[in-house]
Image 1 (cartoon, rainbow, N blue to C red):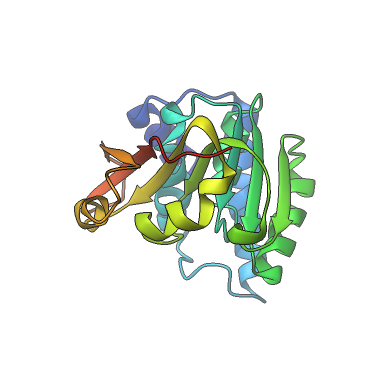
Image 2 (image 1 turned 135 degrees about the vertical axis):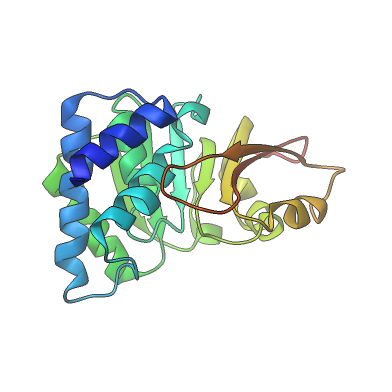
Length: 209
């Protein structure tokens, strides 16, 4: 199966619609990762089929939960989930945040090559960055407790953390300060990705501007 067919089939299973240029952009993005991976270690996943499922489809599995306009992807790494989401949400504004210069250089080049006018790349620790966002998104950042402590200043009133998690999600939710935060867990079924996946949405009275 070609990567394009795998991606199109996966998008259909996720009920994610997108124009052909979004699909082409995702495939071009994978090609960039593969090219950069030859000289710098962006990701341990090198099999093309696994990259489609674990990078593209996994990222796009939260597409329907993006209700806000301004989104920051903290600990974005190689641009995941931010770049695939930006390709399918051209009307939303994304910031890709990471403290690693090697990874922000890659993301900056990817944004240029893909012509992503709705994406800004920033090199900084989350604690030091400033801004006000509808969603603070993460795929492999920190525990929920650590995330709300280090990133709550980035969340505007009424906004939410959207954290992609695995089997440890219930334990991390149980460790949250329930006097200030409420969490809702949404199961994610990602084509080609085995195991328990979920999206944890966290919001509450502790949200600050």
